[in-house]
Length: 195
Image: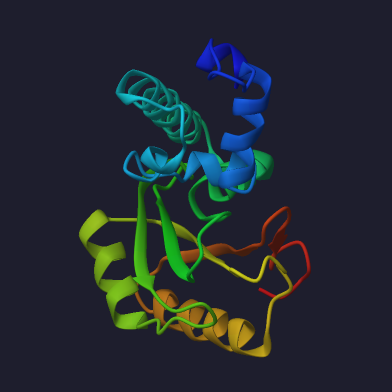
């Protein structure tokens, strides 16, 4: 971060400024979700530094997305976890997303399907089915975040997963996993035998 910023402020070294930026967004994961407008609130980040940070953040996002698109997603659960941490890990409200995959499990599309409050999101299986059909998806990975930071699945999460699995089976789309994203950890339903 200090290398990107290059200079500090009067009375604040570049290392201190770098730490202030990271602290303001809750670390690197939070910074990767930062909107360019949110960067304005940090004293010492002028238009040039904000533009540079925004460009680096976008490059990181695109790099992860390309890695998932270039090789089978489920052959590398770690890549899927990294991708989901990047996209969902630092959100302050609940988001339910779906990774739509082709027959070789390459990423077709990542959609944030539903947004909610701090503690819940309403998910409509028919919308997920409709999107899977539109994309001609062969499989999906379901994902949502817990803004509390605790990635432990709830009973409601388990019920939703089974509902979506049943609905998607009707159109011959496999649910490969449902991942719950916390602040530092991602829990896989498949690894826990919940699918």
